[in-house]
Image (tube, rainbow, N blue to C red):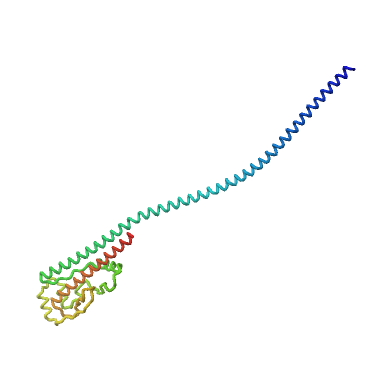
Length: 268
């Protein structure tokens, strides 16, 4: 009986120690559970914070993408504007030399017209000089009507005062301004001075003249009567040549002024 009692006591002590170990283990596990629960709660709070940060970061990314798309659109628009400006500059660079060349062409054209006019005047004066030497009256050579029309157009553009423009219309064919008795002698180069004198001996004396203003020269007599002497014919033809010369000089000066104005406009 004593041995059994000792065995029971030993078993009881073993159970008590075992229970104590279990209690300690349970307490430790409870403490671990508490710490783990605290960690879980802290992690949950951190997750919430991270989620909020993630949402804000996503919003920032979306705004950055929108800004980048806007900047790309602005860059494309700026590139297109740069291309347009380059094209405009290239076109201006191409147009400017053409304008500079145009003024030289206009000046050259005016010089050619003036040279052609001078040649016509020299041809007329040489023709009349030959007529005086040979004591014959020949037909007045016609002036190029195209040159006269171009010169008149240029003169109208150059803004010359109307008082300085010739208000007389001189016909190229001088036979219309001559009397009918003198016209056959003027248009026939084979008739000499004696034939003209004989035809004029039958006319009445005292030709009438109609003064016409031509610039600053004065009045040029235009014969209106049916009587005219050879000397008056020579004088009228000489004055006619002088009027042509004055008209061409004034026209050439008007062209020069117009070309200078155009050159100043293009240079300016």
